[in-house]
Image 1 (cartoon, rainbow, N blue to C red):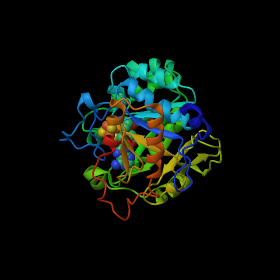
Image 2 (image 1 turned 120 degrees about the vertical axis):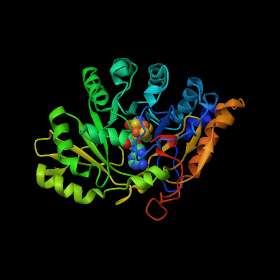
Image 3 (image 1 turned 90 degrees about the vertical axis):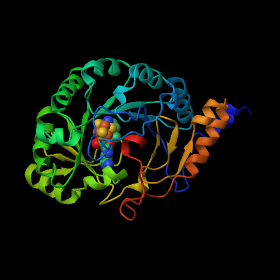
Image 4 (image 1 turned 180 degrees about the horizontal axis):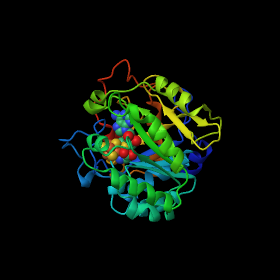
Length: 335
Ligand SMILES: C[S@@+](CC[C@H](N)C(=O)[O-])C[C@H]1O[C@@H](n2cnc3c(N)ncnc32)[C@H](O)[C@@H]1O
Ligand code: SF4
């Protein structure tokens, strides 16, 4: 039996806890043109060297190996993925791979005016755009610069390019923007975006000090104001639990890694820009793929390494029990 056919007979990646891994989050850069208070420290200097970034050929090879093992969904992220030069070329290569059915992108939106159309043409199906506030002052305080107009232009460009749905990611922080969830919900209803509220994760000193607002009480506020009912439709296979307005115009997802973790249904792993495959956002288990790729490994060896890596996937994160455990920042892992 050839290597390729032996792989084909066992196409799935299933971890020790019976979870099927079918979603890869792929960081294409650890750089960013913003410095969100919960993500990247203003003085950060620990970026990966360009020589260590996986090339497009290397990324394509890894994604193809994942696809042969049953991964159908890939999200491009970072850092700010739109800073990676020629990203639409990479997107076109990945979306054309057999087995990849859903290529999506998380972005802060700043470069969407130039890139939205070519990303869509390259096969990116869905966009998540980060926006934590509608107030210029608050956005400036959170992102480290006056970026509200850029993000708004990015949102317009994404809609003009035909992306639908567009999800807005809002990290909710006590005393910073938690008073804005109603305004943000109304904005999303008016503009046709899906809102996703996120509890801050203690990743690095930034994630720890930004503070998290438990989303339970916030959901109660939103239910009272918008008469929300649970959304039963499948909304992308991620960890968010969705609610919607009675008329369906408003949809809100809650991502609650701290107050109510969802590790038992985790279906994903993350690849950093320099080829570290992290098994969990909130744990250290990882496999280094770059040395393998650069030492001429065979496809079979690559696939075996992915399988061995998935065996390491931990049962759950410990953000509550050990909030200081993870010192890497979200931007380094690929959020
Ligand atoms: C790391 S960013 C990368 C993509 C892009 N730069 C962006 O901001 O959307 C991906 C997502 O992670 C979120 N994020 C960053 N740090 C976080 C933290 N400590 N806790 C929860 N979410 C975080 C961001 O708000 C964003 O929605
Ligand atoms: S959340 Fe996104 S935009 Fe903000 S600093 Fe992190 S990578 Fe950059």
